[in-house]
Length: 84
Image (cartoon, rainbow, N blue to C red; front, top):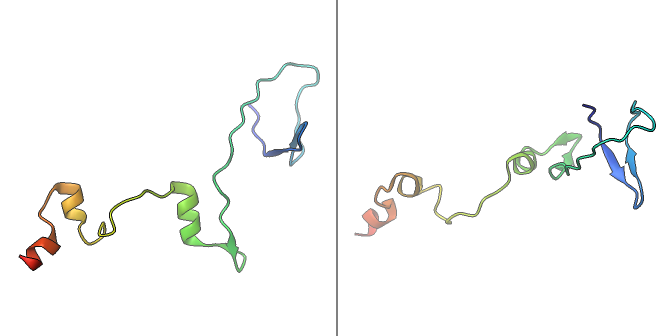
C-alpha cells in the first residue's frame, strides 16, 4: 500500500510529493479528507484548535463542567441542593 498527500485540481489528483507508482496498472484509490488543519500561532499549533481538529466538539449543557457527576452518574445537581 502506498499513502501520500495530494490535491484535486478539478480534473486530476495531483500528488503533493514525489510518488513511485507502477505505470499502466489499474489502482484502487480511496479518498479521505484530513481533519481540519489547525491554524498556527507563532509557528506552533494552537493547542485548543489541535484538540478540536483531532477530537472534534460535542454539544452539551452549559453547566456540564459544574454538574458532571449529575450527567455522568445521575447524582443530584449541586445547584439544586444549594437552592433547596
